[in-house]
Each structure stands twice: as structure tokens, then as C-alpha cells.
Image (cartoon, rainbow, N blue to C red):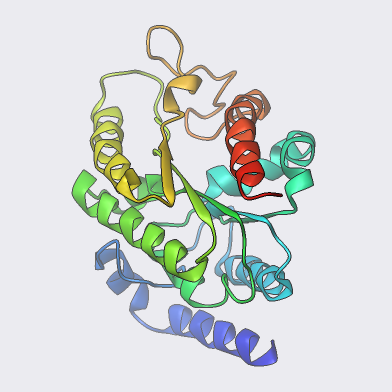
Length: 249
């Protein structure tokens, strides 16, 4: 573990003192890189600490269900009661970190987020930050998601993958942002031709009848509210239950 933490600290220092941040933003969505963007709401040191905490969980190897993603997954802690009631019996591991692109999640999978874990199910939601922070197109974002799925298939060889379409964001329908999400999801769902992958697009569950996103469901029209997480949990729970039952758990 000490060697692992030292490696994380070295990567952190490189990110601070080199021109790496500019390079990272120009890399394709399939190139693993650690976080290099400093946010007001999350420092680089906090990002590395959150990853180190995830590595400890991976080294313990006890989670039956692993969640991989960005802030939308990370923020289940804002609906902790729903998380505990819905997923607690599955001994879940939440490996979502706010602000992550596919590149950052790939780096985390390559640097300790697999370890001794042998989960029965892996739940994946990633890609929206490639739009928000790198302004990528549908094809490039899809290739990043595809690479994350490939890492999960190889790193968690006994797990079934629950792959989710990127959630819609922005209040109004018909915007370029909504269109880009839709185009990317059309590509992502093709990955479900693998017997170990099921694809689900839960995005419509968060929309009003006219296609708008209300603040009641997504307070900032990006991250689910407590009610939004309840909607998501109600959709996910029967899927996970069926998969775990099928595995004889």
C-alpha cells in the first residue's frame, strides 16, 4: 500500500509542476491520465485522496457490486439513505469521482481500482465531463466509454456490466448538448452485443413530458436531486437483483 500511495503522490506532483494539464486536455478520450484540472469544489490533492481511499477498498476485495463513474455516481452520498436501503445489501463500492473524464477513470482503473476485487456486477456511467470540460464530439466520447468498458471486462472477469447511457443535461430539449448526448448513446448501446453487457438508457426517467429537466429532479439540470436519485435507484434495483439472483447469490 505504501508503494501505491507513493506512486499517487508522484503523479500528483507531476501534475502540479509540469505542463501536463495542457497536454492532458488535448489527449484522446482513450488515453489514461490522472486528474490535472483544479476545481474550486475539489482540489487535486482531494482527488488523489479519494482515489487512494478507493484503492484501499479494492485491496480489501469485498464488494459484490462496483459503481464506476464521475460526480453523478460520486454524489450518491447526497442520497445516502436511498443508497443504503437500495444497494447496501450488495456490499457496494462507489468509485465515482466528481469531474472525471473517461481518461481519468481509465487511469484509476490502471492504478489500483481493480486490485483484489471480484464483483458480480459493475455499474458504469461516464462521459458527460468529456463534453463539459473537453468539448468532445460523440465519436471521441464513445471511444472513451468503450475503453472503460473494455477495462472493466478484463479487470473484473467474473462481473456482468450494467452500462448506462449518458444522462441528459440542460433544462431544455432539442439543444446541441442534448443532441450530442443522444448521438453518443446511440453508439454506446452497440457495446451491449457482448453477452456480459446490458445497456440501459435511464435518461428519459428524468425528463418532464415536454422534454424539459426540472429542478426538482436535477437541481442544476445535470446532477440528480435526492428525488432524482430515488428514481434512479428504483430503476437500477430490480436489474441488480435479477443479475445477482442469476449468479446464485
